[in-house]
Length: 468
Image (cartoon, rainbow, N blue to C red; front, side, top):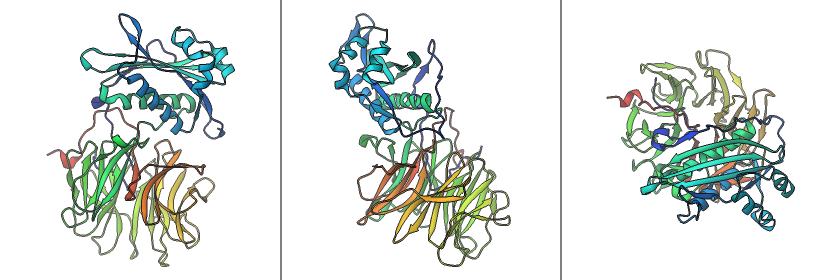
């Protein structure tokens, strides 16, 4: 397979082999509930999460001496809240009726009592700490208090430093039980942080947990357009380390950095095809910014042929089309177009941005039915989303500041973007259709966010450029 990376969007790396996390469902029920994503309302599921119970193989229940249970419960509750599918039943409610103590002391579930308290779903968790610091085992169980039934259970075994990943994994399973789509708690965000004259790539967990922030590159130069590979193992970006805008690639662990593509002039805006066989990128080898496709044999095919600038390619999920930015209208205000990926602009183009505003940074949604892009609205930039079915665009961001550089979450429910206010730049997350936002960075120097894909539980293989 061709191993490079995709676009100025976002992806992330997590390997199950490093995770060393095993999960089994022996004796546990398979998911039975699904919510129609098109008809779901804003009403959230009321969920009760009782304190995690520590188990000792010899003595039964034990005290949470290590604090693992408390920490894991806090992570889980936060993940489920950030998913925006759940509301949490306040602990004071079930303290009053001693409901939690009852559940801790028996394997049975009093569905009627929990339903009367307002809980629709209930999570009970047991865990045990392995000897000699070898990690811990968690057993999570999810119950439906409304229909009085056990929904499913998961068992995880992981080392101590993988506690957060373990809980994120279960939180995503809970969301999938409700919606049929995996949650995004286990995903990560790549972005640029300006440090003086330099811009370096950083990674952070979806929940913005500060200790999860890691510096990925140490190029000591200007880097641009970080983009995840579809399998979440690599990030490709533009680096000026060699005094030319070259494409560089780095493993998501921060290892194996190499130059991927180098021609005089621009080598930028890479976008990996969904099948990982090709990369769309922007080159200026023809004295102009044009879009090319690089195949697995490192052969280049030119897709655009216009004397004005063409840039920012993004693939459709089926790989048949590419959306891009072009100033070919000649107005000095770039627009968003769609072309066939096999014929480029020699085929019929479809323009999706209306009017004569400035538009850029298209990002195709994972479901393939929408394209987010940056658009000038008045004196500011906002994020618009074009619906390929209705052929209409709507503004999804609002408020103070300019919003640019959108990227989709892998479930297609959220977008992440850069917001500028008072000359400070930070990264924000917003659910499409909601006006509420969540600030992810606070440095005032965040740029070019890119959301990771879902973790693919396969053994990663190196890009062709790293095989030697």
